Length: 532
Image (cartoon, rainbow, N blue to C red; front, side, top):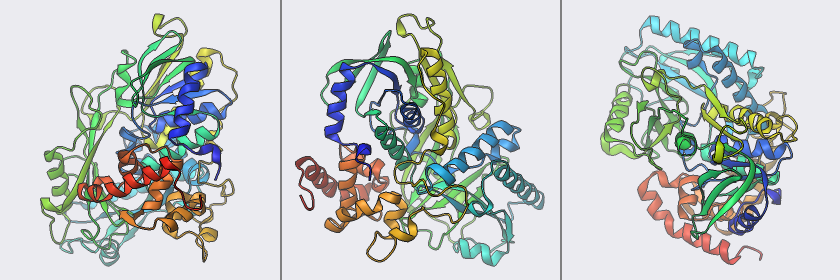
Protein backbone atom coordinates (compact mmCIF):
# COMPACT_ATOMS: atom_id res chain seq x y z
CA UNK A 1 0.00 0.00 0.00
CA UNK A 2 1.00 3.64 -0.45
CA UNK A 3 1.74 5.03 3.02
CA UNK A 4 0.91 8.53 1.78
CA UNK A 5 -2.74 7.50 1.59
CA UNK A 6 -3.03 6.52 5.27
CA UNK A 7 -5.49 8.61 7.27
CA UNK A 8 -5.45 8.39 11.07
CA UNK A 9 -5.72 10.47 14.23
CA UNK A 10 -2.06 11.51 14.35
CA UNK A 11 -2.04 12.67 10.72
CA UNK A 12 -5.24 14.63 11.34
CA UNK A 13 -3.64 16.51 14.26
CA UNK A 14 -0.57 17.41 12.22
CA UNK A 15 -2.60 18.58 9.25
CA UNK A 16 -4.91 20.69 11.40
CA UNK A 17 -1.81 22.56 12.56
CA UNK A 18 -0.54 23.02 9.01
CA UNK A 19 -3.96 24.16 7.81
CA UNK A 20 -4.03 26.92 10.43
CA UNK A 21 -0.57 28.12 9.44
CA UNK A 22 -0.47 27.93 5.64
CA UNK A 23 -2.57 29.29 2.78
CA UNK A 24 -4.04 26.65 0.49
CA UNK A 25 -5.02 27.06 -3.13
CA UNK A 26 -8.39 25.35 -2.56
CA UNK A 27 -10.56 24.74 0.49
CA UNK A 28 -13.20 22.07 -0.09
CA UNK A 29 -16.07 22.03 2.41
CA UNK A 30 -17.84 18.67 2.65
CA UNK A 31 -16.39 15.18 2.38
CA UNK A 32 -19.11 13.20 0.72
CA UNK A 33 -18.48 11.74 -2.73
CA UNK A 34 -18.50 15.11 -4.52
CA UNK A 35 -16.35 16.89 -1.94
CA UNK A 36 -13.82 14.08 -1.70
CA UNK A 37 -13.86 13.91 -5.49
CA UNK A 38 -13.19 17.65 -5.70
CA UNK A 39 -10.29 17.33 -3.24
CA UNK A 40 -8.78 14.57 -5.40
CA UNK A 41 -9.37 16.48 -8.62
CA UNK A 42 -7.68 19.63 -7.31
CA UNK A 43 -4.79 17.83 -5.61
CA UNK A 44 -4.08 15.70 -8.68
CA UNK A 45 -3.72 18.91 -10.71
CA UNK A 46 -0.91 19.97 -8.38
CA UNK A 47 -2.92 22.41 -6.26
CA UNK A 48 -2.59 22.61 -2.48
CA UNK A 49 -5.87 21.46 -0.94
CA UNK A 50 -7.57 21.45 2.46
CA UNK A 51 -10.79 19.44 2.65
CA UNK A 52 -12.92 19.72 5.79
CA UNK A 53 -16.08 18.11 7.09
CA UNK A 54 -17.95 18.76 10.33
CA UNK A 55 -18.38 15.03 10.83
CA UNK A 56 -16.76 12.04 9.13
CA UNK A 57 -16.10 10.87 5.60
CA UNK A 58 -19.41 9.95 3.93
CA UNK A 59 -21.36 11.06 6.99
CA UNK A 60 -24.22 12.55 4.93
CA UNK A 61 -26.05 11.51 1.79
CA UNK A 62 -23.19 9.54 0.25
CA UNK A 63 -23.59 6.60 2.66
CA UNK A 64 -27.37 6.35 2.25
CA UNK A 65 -27.61 5.62 -1.49
CA UNK A 66 -29.06 2.57 -3.24
CA UNK A 67 -25.50 1.47 -4.05
CA UNK A 68 -26.28 1.80 -7.76
CA UNK A 69 -23.85 3.07 -10.38
CA UNK A 70 -26.31 3.31 -13.21
CA UNK A 71 -26.41 4.29 -16.84
CA UNK A 72 -29.19 6.86 -16.65
CA UNK A 73 -32.00 4.93 -18.29
CA UNK A 74 -34.62 6.71 -16.19
CA UNK A 75 -33.35 10.09 -17.41
CA UNK A 76 -33.43 8.93 -21.02
CA UNK A 77 -37.11 8.04 -20.58
CA UNK A 78 -37.72 11.67 -19.51
CA UNK A 79 -35.89 13.04 -22.52
CA UNK A 80 -32.84 14.11 -20.49
CA UNK A 81 -30.39 12.66 -23.00
CA UNK A 82 -27.41 14.66 -21.74
CA UNK A 83 -27.78 13.43 -18.16
CA UNK A 84 -28.32 9.85 -19.33
CA UNK A 85 -25.18 9.91 -21.48
CA UNK A 86 -23.15 11.53 -18.70
CA UNK A 87 -24.29 8.79 -16.29
CA UNK A 88 -23.32 6.04 -18.74
CA UNK A 89 -19.89 7.60 -19.31
CA UNK A 90 -19.20 7.95 -15.58
CA UNK A 91 -20.36 4.39 -14.94
CA UNK A 92 -17.81 3.22 -17.51
CA UNK A 93 -15.05 5.29 -15.87
CA UNK A 94 -15.66 3.58 -12.53
CA UNK A 95 -16.01 0.08 -13.97
CA UNK A 96 -12.96 0.26 -16.23
CA UNK A 97 -10.45 2.67 -14.76
CA UNK A 98 -10.88 4.22 -11.34
CA UNK A 99 -12.66 1.76 -9.04
CA UNK A 100 -13.08 -1.70 -10.58
CA UNK A 101 -12.51 -3.19 -7.12
CA UNK A 102 -15.53 -1.34 -5.71
CA UNK A 103 -17.90 -1.12 -8.68
CA UNK A 104 -19.12 -4.23 -10.48
CA UNK A 105 -21.70 -5.16 -13.05
CA UNK A 106 -24.73 -6.80 -11.46
CA UNK A 107 -27.86 -8.49 -12.86
CA UNK A 108 -31.31 -7.06 -12.20
CA UNK A 109 -34.62 -8.77 -12.86
CA UNK A 110 -38.08 -7.29 -13.34
CA UNK A 111 -40.48 -10.14 -12.42
CA UNK A 112 -43.31 -10.33 -14.93
CA UNK A 113 -46.24 -10.68 -12.57
CA UNK A 114 -49.88 -9.90 -13.19
CA UNK A 115 -49.15 -6.29 -12.16
CA UNK A 116 -46.89 -5.86 -15.22
CA UNK A 117 -48.95 -5.65 -18.40
CA UNK A 118 -47.75 -6.90 -21.76
CA UNK A 119 -47.55 -3.31 -22.96
CA UNK A 120 -45.45 -2.31 -19.96
CA UNK A 121 -43.23 -5.35 -20.51
CA UNK A 122 -42.59 -4.28 -24.11
CA UNK A 123 -41.89 -0.70 -23.05
CA UNK A 124 -39.43 -1.75 -20.34
CA UNK A 125 -37.56 -4.08 -22.69
CA UNK A 126 -37.33 -1.29 -25.26
CA UNK A 127 -35.90 0.90 -22.51
CA UNK A 128 -33.33 -1.76 -21.61
CA UNK A 129 -32.23 -1.88 -25.25
CA UNK A 130 -31.87 1.90 -25.27
CA UNK A 131 -29.80 1.54 -22.11
CA UNK A 132 -27.56 -0.92 -23.92
CA UNK A 133 -27.18 1.65 -26.70
CA UNK A 134 -26.07 4.14 -24.03
CA UNK A 135 -23.46 1.61 -22.90
CA UNK A 136 -22.14 1.38 -26.45
CA UNK A 137 -22.15 5.17 -26.87
CA UNK A 138 -20.15 5.48 -23.64
CA UNK A 139 -17.67 2.88 -25.01
CA UNK A 140 -18.11 0.49 -22.12
CA UNK A 141 -17.14 -2.98 -23.44
CA UNK A 142 -19.92 -5.55 -23.74
CA UNK A 143 -18.12 -8.10 -21.49
CA UNK A 144 -18.35 -5.60 -18.62
CA UNK A 145 -22.10 -5.06 -19.06
CA UNK A 146 -24.03 -7.84 -20.84
CA UNK A 147 -27.15 -6.98 -22.80
CA UNK A 148 -30.77 -7.47 -21.69
CA UNK A 149 -32.71 -10.70 -22.16
CA UNK A 150 -36.02 -12.32 -21.30
CA UNK A 151 -36.17 -15.15 -18.74
CA UNK A 152 -38.74 -17.87 -18.30
CA UNK A 153 -40.49 -18.28 -14.95
CA UNK A 154 -38.23 -21.13 -13.81
CA UNK A 155 -35.01 -19.17 -14.32
CA UNK A 156 -36.53 -16.07 -12.75
CA UNK A 157 -37.26 -18.07 -9.60
CA UNK A 158 -33.76 -19.53 -9.57
CA UNK A 159 -32.44 -15.98 -9.24
CA UNK A 160 -35.07 -15.12 -6.58
CA UNK A 161 -36.55 -18.38 -5.17
CA UNK A 162 -38.94 -16.61 -2.80
CA UNK A 163 -41.00 -15.06 -5.62
CA UNK A 164 -44.58 -16.21 -5.75
CA UNK A 165 -45.16 -18.52 -8.74
CA UNK A 166 -48.79 -17.38 -9.05
CA UNK A 167 -49.14 -15.43 -12.28
CA UNK A 168 -45.37 -15.26 -12.83
CA UNK A 169 -44.74 -15.54 -16.57
CA UNK A 170 -41.00 -14.82 -16.46
CA UNK A 171 -38.69 -11.87 -15.99
CA UNK A 172 -36.72 -9.21 -17.83
CA UNK A 173 -32.99 -9.36 -17.12
CA UNK A 174 -30.76 -6.30 -17.39
CA UNK A 175 -27.28 -5.38 -16.18
CA UNK A 176 -26.04 -2.23 -14.49
CA UNK A 177 -23.32 -1.12 -12.11
CA UNK A 178 -23.40 -1.39 -8.34
CA UNK A 179 -21.20 -0.43 -5.43
CA UNK A 180 -20.46 -2.96 -2.75
CA UNK A 181 -20.42 -0.02 -0.32
CA UNK A 182 -20.93 3.65 -1.17
CA UNK A 183 -19.13 4.90 1.96
CA UNK A 184 -16.05 2.87 1.00
CA UNK A 185 -15.95 4.71 -2.32
CA UNK A 186 -15.76 8.01 -0.43
CA UNK A 187 -13.00 6.65 1.83
CA UNK A 188 -11.04 5.57 -1.25
CA UNK A 189 -11.49 9.02 -2.82
CA UNK A 190 -10.32 10.81 0.34
CA UNK A 191 -7.31 8.53 0.76
CA UNK A 192 -6.32 8.92 -2.88
CA UNK A 193 -6.59 12.70 -2.48
CA UNK A 194 -4.38 12.45 0.63
CA UNK A 195 -1.80 10.48 -1.37
CA UNK A 196 -1.69 13.46 -3.75
CA UNK A 197 -1.09 15.86 -0.86
CA UNK A 198 -4.61 16.97 0.15
CA UNK A 199 -5.12 17.60 3.86
CA UNK A 200 -8.23 15.67 4.91
CA UNK A 201 -9.79 17.16 8.06
CA UNK A 202 -12.75 15.31 9.54
CA UNK A 203 -14.50 16.66 12.66
CA UNK A 204 -13.60 20.15 11.41
CA UNK A 205 -16.68 22.35 11.09
CA UNK A 206 -16.59 25.36 8.76
CA UNK A 207 -18.54 28.01 10.66
CA UNK A 208 -18.54 30.74 8.03
CA UNK A 209 -16.76 31.81 4.88
CA UNK A 210 -14.53 34.87 5.11
CA UNK A 211 -12.72 37.06 2.64
CA UNK A 212 -9.65 34.86 3.00
CA UNK A 213 -11.14 31.38 3.30
CA UNK A 214 -13.14 30.24 6.29
CA UNK A 215 -13.45 30.27 10.06
CA UNK A 216 -13.49 26.72 11.37
CA UNK A 217 -13.71 24.76 14.61
CA UNK A 218 -12.05 21.52 15.63
CA UNK A 219 -15.06 19.58 16.89
CA UNK A 220 -12.87 17.35 19.07
CA UNK A 221 -11.25 20.18 21.06
CA UNK A 222 -13.60 23.14 20.47
CA UNK A 223 -10.68 25.28 19.25
CA UNK A 224 -11.54 27.81 16.54
CA UNK A 225 -9.08 28.85 13.84
CA UNK A 226 -8.91 30.27 10.31
CA UNK A 227 -8.29 28.27 7.17
CA UNK A 228 -6.83 30.55 4.52
CA UNK A 229 -7.49 29.62 0.89
CA UNK A 230 -7.56 31.32 -2.48
CA UNK A 231 -10.86 29.73 -3.45
CA UNK A 232 -13.57 27.73 -1.65
CA UNK A 233 -15.58 24.82 -3.09
CA UNK A 234 -18.82 24.32 -1.18
CA UNK A 235 -19.73 20.65 -1.65
CA UNK A 236 -22.01 20.20 1.36
CA UNK A 237 -24.99 18.77 -0.52
CA UNK A 238 -28.35 19.34 1.13
CA UNK A 239 -26.61 21.61 3.67
CA UNK A 240 -25.11 23.90 0.97
CA UNK A 241 -27.50 26.75 1.77
CA UNK A 242 -25.86 27.18 5.16
CA UNK A 243 -22.78 28.57 3.42
CA UNK A 244 -24.38 29.95 0.25
CA UNK A 245 -27.81 31.57 0.81
CA UNK A 246 -28.48 31.75 -2.94
CA UNK A 247 -28.80 27.98 -3.17
CA UNK A 248 -32.39 26.77 -3.65
CA UNK A 249 -32.80 23.07 -3.04
CA UNK A 250 -35.76 20.81 -2.55
CA UNK A 251 -34.48 17.81 -0.59
CA UNK A 252 -36.02 14.43 -1.27
CA UNK A 253 -35.97 11.55 1.20
CA UNK A 254 -35.02 8.07 0.05
CA UNK A 255 -35.70 5.30 2.57
CA UNK A 256 -34.28 1.76 2.52
CA UNK A 257 -35.06 -1.37 4.51
CA UNK A 258 -32.41 -3.78 5.78
CA UNK A 259 -33.16 -7.51 6.00
CA UNK A 260 -30.97 -9.89 7.99
CA UNK A 261 -29.22 -12.85 6.31
CA UNK A 262 -31.61 -15.70 5.63
CA UNK A 263 -34.70 -13.50 5.39
CA UNK A 264 -34.78 -13.67 1.58
CA UNK A 265 -32.74 -16.81 0.84
CA UNK A 266 -31.19 -17.53 -2.52
CA UNK A 267 -31.37 -13.99 -3.92
CA UNK A 268 -28.56 -13.58 -6.46
CA UNK A 269 -29.92 -10.75 -8.62
CA UNK A 270 -31.37 -7.37 -7.83
CA UNK A 271 -35.12 -7.12 -8.30
CA UNK A 272 -36.97 -4.19 -9.86
CA UNK A 273 -40.49 -4.05 -8.42
CA UNK A 274 -43.19 -1.73 -9.82
CA UNK A 275 -44.51 0.86 -7.37
CA UNK A 276 -48.32 0.95 -7.64
CA UNK A 277 -49.65 4.23 -9.01
CA UNK A 278 -46.17 5.63 -9.68
CA UNK A 279 -45.96 5.18 -13.45
CA UNK A 280 -42.61 3.77 -14.45
CA UNK A 281 -40.97 4.02 -11.03
CA UNK A 282 -39.63 0.86 -9.43
CA UNK A 283 -38.50 -0.19 -5.98
CA UNK A 284 -35.28 -2.18 -5.74
CA UNK A 285 -34.32 -5.26 -3.75
CA UNK A 286 -30.55 -5.76 -3.72
CA UNK A 287 -28.59 -8.66 -2.16
CA UNK A 288 -25.46 -7.79 -0.17
CA UNK A 289 -22.17 -9.70 0.12
CA UNK A 290 -22.74 -10.23 3.86
CA UNK A 291 -26.06 -12.01 3.24
CA UNK A 292 -28.25 -9.06 4.10
CA UNK A 293 -30.58 -7.49 1.54
CA UNK A 294 -31.60 -3.84 1.08
CA UNK A 295 -34.98 -2.75 -0.25
CA UNK A 296 -35.67 0.80 -1.41
CA UNK A 297 -36.39 3.41 -2.21
CA UNK A 298 -38.88 6.17 -1.61
CA UNK A 299 -38.87 9.66 -3.11
CA UNK A 300 -40.62 11.99 -0.69
CA UNK A 301 -40.18 15.77 -0.37
CA UNK A 302 -38.69 17.05 2.88
CA UNK A 303 -39.68 20.42 4.29
CA UNK A 304 -38.15 22.39 7.12
CA UNK A 305 -34.66 22.20 8.65
CA UNK A 306 -32.33 19.55 7.24
CA UNK A 307 -31.25 17.08 9.97
CA UNK A 308 -27.69 15.75 10.20
CA UNK A 309 -29.03 12.19 10.20
CA UNK A 310 -32.52 11.77 8.67
CA UNK A 311 -34.82 9.10 10.07
CA UNK A 312 -36.77 6.51 8.12
CA UNK A 313 -40.44 7.17 8.94
CA UNK A 314 -42.79 4.29 9.64
CA UNK A 315 -44.99 5.14 6.65
CA UNK A 316 -42.01 4.73 4.30
CA UNK A 317 -41.11 1.39 5.88
CA UNK A 318 -44.61 0.00 5.54
CA UNK A 319 -44.99 1.30 1.97
CA UNK A 320 -41.78 -0.43 0.85
CA UNK A 321 -42.75 -3.62 2.66
CA UNK A 322 -46.10 -3.60 0.83
CA UNK A 323 -44.38 -3.32 -2.56
CA UNK A 324 -42.10 -6.23 -1.69
CA UNK A 325 -44.86 -8.41 -0.25
CA UNK A 326 -46.89 -8.05 -3.45
CA UNK A 327 -44.46 -10.43 -5.20
CA UNK A 328 -43.41 -12.79 -2.37
CA UNK A 329 -44.58 -16.36 -1.99
CA UNK A 330 -44.74 -15.83 1.79
CA UNK A 331 -45.22 -12.16 2.79
CA UNK A 332 -42.84 -10.69 5.35
CA UNK A 333 -44.21 -9.16 8.58
CA UNK A 334 -43.06 -5.78 9.87
CA UNK A 335 -40.85 -7.60 12.38
CA UNK A 336 -38.75 -8.99 9.53
CA UNK A 337 -37.26 -5.54 8.92
CA UNK A 338 -33.97 -5.67 10.84
CA UNK A 339 -33.08 -2.04 10.17
CA UNK A 340 -33.89 0.98 8.04
CA UNK A 341 -32.07 4.07 6.86
CA UNK A 342 -32.90 7.25 4.96
CA UNK A 343 -30.88 9.73 2.94
CA UNK A 344 -31.64 13.15 1.48
CA UNK A 345 -31.06 13.97 -2.18
CA UNK A 346 -29.87 17.55 -2.82
CA UNK A 347 -32.24 18.24 -5.74
CA UNK A 348 -32.35 21.63 -7.40
CA UNK A 349 -35.68 23.30 -6.69
CA UNK A 350 -38.26 23.17 -9.47
CA UNK A 351 -41.89 22.57 -10.23
CA UNK A 352 -43.77 19.38 -9.37
CA UNK A 353 -42.93 16.58 -6.97
CA UNK A 354 -39.40 15.57 -6.11
CA UNK A 355 -39.67 12.40 -8.24
CA UNK A 356 -40.05 14.70 -11.27
CA UNK A 357 -37.11 17.00 -10.48
CA UNK A 358 -33.99 16.77 -12.63
CA UNK A 359 -30.88 15.05 -11.30
CA UNK A 360 -28.74 17.53 -13.23
CA UNK A 361 -26.05 19.23 -11.17
CA UNK A 362 -25.21 22.93 -11.11
CA UNK A 363 -22.09 24.93 -10.32
CA UNK A 364 -22.84 28.33 -8.83
CA UNK A 365 -20.73 31.38 -8.02
CA UNK A 366 -17.04 31.75 -8.58
CA UNK A 367 -16.95 35.40 -9.68
CA UNK A 368 -14.43 37.67 -7.98
CA UNK A 369 -15.80 40.58 -6.02
CA UNK A 370 -19.35 39.28 -6.10
CA UNK A 371 -19.34 37.92 -2.58
CA UNK A 372 -18.17 41.05 -0.72
CA UNK A 373 -16.80 40.10 2.69
CA UNK A 374 -17.88 36.45 2.20
CA UNK A 375 -14.90 35.67 0.01
CA UNK A 376 -13.11 36.50 -3.22
CA UNK A 377 -14.14 33.25 -4.86
CA UNK A 378 -16.76 30.79 -3.64
CA UNK A 379 -17.95 27.95 -5.85
CA UNK A 380 -20.96 25.85 -4.84
CA UNK A 381 -21.78 22.53 -6.50
CA UNK A 382 -25.26 21.08 -5.92
CA UNK A 383 -27.71 18.61 -7.41
CA UNK A 384 -26.52 15.55 -9.27
CA UNK A 385 -26.21 11.98 -8.00
CA UNK A 386 -23.62 9.51 -6.79
CA UNK A 387 -22.88 8.04 -10.23
CA UNK A 388 -21.73 11.41 -11.60
CA UNK A 389 -19.79 12.63 -8.55
CA UNK A 390 -16.53 12.74 -10.58
CA UNK A 391 -17.95 15.00 -13.28
CA UNK A 392 -19.52 17.24 -10.63
CA UNK A 393 -16.14 17.55 -8.93
CA UNK A 394 -14.41 18.28 -12.23
CA UNK A 395 -16.85 21.06 -13.13
CA UNK A 396 -16.52 22.62 -9.66
CA UNK A 397 -12.72 22.59 -9.73
CA UNK A 398 -12.65 23.96 -13.29
CA UNK A 399 -14.75 26.89 -12.09
CA UNK A 400 -12.62 27.35 -8.98
CA UNK A 401 -9.37 27.38 -10.96
CA UNK A 402 -10.80 29.98 -13.32
CA UNK A 403 -12.26 32.13 -10.55
CA UNK A 404 -9.04 32.30 -8.53
CA UNK A 405 -6.68 32.42 -11.48
CA UNK A 406 -4.82 29.33 -10.30
CA UNK A 407 -2.14 27.67 -12.36
CA UNK A 408 -3.41 24.14 -12.84
CA UNK A 409 -3.58 21.59 -15.60
CA UNK A 410 -6.66 19.78 -16.91
CA UNK A 411 -8.63 17.23 -14.94
CA UNK A 412 -6.91 13.83 -14.56
CA UNK A 413 -9.47 11.86 -12.57
CA UNK A 414 -11.12 9.97 -15.45
CA UNK A 415 -8.07 7.68 -15.62
CA UNK A 416 -6.72 7.96 -12.06
CA UNK A 417 -7.08 4.66 -10.13
CA UNK A 418 -8.33 5.01 -6.58
CA UNK A 419 -6.66 3.39 -3.60
CA UNK A 420 -7.10 -0.38 -3.95
CA UNK A 421 -7.42 -0.36 -7.74
CA UNK A 422 -4.55 -1.00 -10.13
CA UNK A 423 -3.56 0.80 -13.28
CA UNK A 424 -3.32 -2.44 -15.26
CA UNK A 425 -6.99 -3.12 -15.87
CA UNK A 426 -7.73 -0.82 -18.74
CA UNK A 427 -9.99 -1.01 -21.72
CA UNK A 428 -9.63 -4.70 -22.56
CA UNK A 429 -13.01 -5.48 -21.03
CA UNK A 430 -11.69 -8.84 -19.86
CA UNK A 431 -13.31 -9.98 -16.65
CA UNK A 432 -15.34 -8.04 -14.18
CA UNK A 433 -13.61 -8.73 -10.89
CA UNK A 434 -10.87 -6.65 -9.27
CA UNK A 435 -7.68 -6.73 -11.31
CA UNK A 436 -5.70 -8.66 -8.72
CA UNK A 437 -8.41 -11.21 -7.91
CA UNK A 438 -6.51 -14.21 -9.29
CA UNK A 439 -3.20 -13.49 -7.59
CA UNK A 440 -4.64 -12.32 -4.30
CA UNK A 441 -7.06 -15.20 -4.10
CA UNK A 442 -4.30 -17.77 -4.58
CA UNK A 443 -3.37 -20.23 -1.85
CA UNK A 444 -1.95 -18.35 1.12
CA UNK A 445 -3.29 -15.03 -0.12
CA UNK A 446 -6.29 -13.00 1.02
CA UNK A 447 -9.72 -14.61 0.70
CA UNK A 448 -12.09 -13.33 -1.97
CA UNK A 449 -14.13 -11.47 0.64
CA UNK A 450 -11.15 -9.24 1.49
CA UNK A 451 -10.29 -8.73 -2.17
CA UNK A 452 -13.86 -7.56 -2.83
CA UNK A 453 -13.63 -4.97 -0.05
CA UNK A 454 -10.01 -3.82 -0.34
CA UNK A 455 -8.88 -4.71 -3.87
CA UNK A 456 -5.11 -4.55 -4.22
CA UNK A 457 -4.75 -3.62 -0.54
CA UNK A 458 -6.19 -6.96 0.61
CA UNK A 459 -2.68 -8.39 1.04
CA UNK A 460 -1.83 -5.54 3.45
CA UNK A 461 -5.06 -6.05 5.43
CA UNK A 462 -4.58 -9.80 5.75
CA UNK A 463 -1.95 -9.79 8.59
CA UNK A 464 -4.32 -7.78 10.80
CA UNK A 465 -7.19 -10.14 9.99
CA UNK A 466 -5.02 -13.12 10.89
CA UNK A 467 -3.99 -11.47 14.16
CA UNK A 468 -7.55 -10.45 15.08
CA UNK A 469 -9.86 -12.88 13.24
CA UNK A 470 -12.93 -12.53 15.49
CA UNK A 471 -16.03 -11.70 13.46
CA UNK A 472 -17.78 -8.61 14.82
CA UNK A 473 -20.84 -8.74 12.53
CA UNK A 474 -21.83 -8.60 8.86
CA UNK A 475 -18.80 -10.74 7.99
CA UNK A 476 -16.35 -8.10 9.28
CA UNK A 477 -13.39 -9.07 11.48
CA UNK A 478 -11.77 -7.14 14.32
CA UNK A 479 -8.61 -6.88 12.22
CA UNK A 480 -10.49 -4.87 9.61
CA UNK A 481 -11.64 -2.44 12.28
CA UNK A 482 -8.00 -1.98 13.29
CA UNK A 483 -7.07 -1.36 9.63
CA UNK A 484 -9.72 1.37 9.44
CA UNK A 485 -8.35 3.09 12.53
CA UNK A 486 -4.78 2.92 11.23
CA UNK A 487 -5.31 3.79 7.57
CA UNK A 488 -8.89 4.88 6.79
CA UNK A 489 -9.31 7.83 9.14
CA UNK A 490 -11.74 6.23 11.60
CA UNK A 491 -11.66 8.14 14.89
CA UNK A 492 -14.43 6.54 16.95
CA UNK A 493 -16.81 3.58 17.16
CA UNK A 494 -19.41 5.19 14.89
CA UNK A 495 -16.82 5.73 12.16
CA UNK A 496 -15.91 2.04 12.35
CA UNK A 497 -19.37 0.50 12.59
CA UNK A 498 -21.54 2.94 10.61
CA UNK A 499 -19.30 4.04 7.73
CA UNK A 500 -16.07 2.00 7.30
CA UNK A 501 -18.30 -1.04 7.70
CA UNK A 502 -22.10 -1.39 7.74
CA UNK A 503 -22.40 -3.45 10.91
CA UNK A 504 -24.36 -0.60 12.50
CA UNK A 505 -27.31 -0.78 10.11
CA UNK A 506 -28.80 -3.42 12.43
CA UNK A 507 -28.99 -2.11 16.01
CA UNK A 508 -28.43 -5.49 17.66
CA UNK A 509 -25.35 -6.15 15.53
CA UNK A 510 -23.99 -2.72 16.38
CA UNK A 511 -24.38 -3.24 20.11
CA UNK A 512 -22.63 -6.60 19.92
CA UNK A 513 -19.71 -5.11 17.96
CA UNK A 514 -19.06 -2.09 20.20
CA UNK A 515 -16.55 -3.81 22.55
CA UNK A 516 -14.43 -4.96 19.61
CA UNK A 517 -14.54 -1.50 18.03
CA UNK A 518 -13.38 0.13 21.27
CA UNK A 519 -10.62 -2.45 21.70
CA UNK A 520 -9.27 -1.87 18.19
CA UNK A 521 -9.34 1.90 18.61
CA UNK A 522 -7.36 1.51 21.82
CA UNK A 523 -4.80 -0.73 20.11
CA UNK A 524 -4.38 1.77 17.29
CA UNK A 525 -3.91 4.66 19.74
CA UNK A 526 -1.37 2.72 21.80
CA UNK A 527 0.53 1.36 18.83
CA UNK A 528 -0.16 -2.17 20.09
CA UNK A 529 0.06 -3.84 16.71
CA UNK A 530 0.96 -7.32 15.44
CA UNK A 531 4.71 -7.63 15.03
CA UNK A 532 5.38 -4.30 16.75
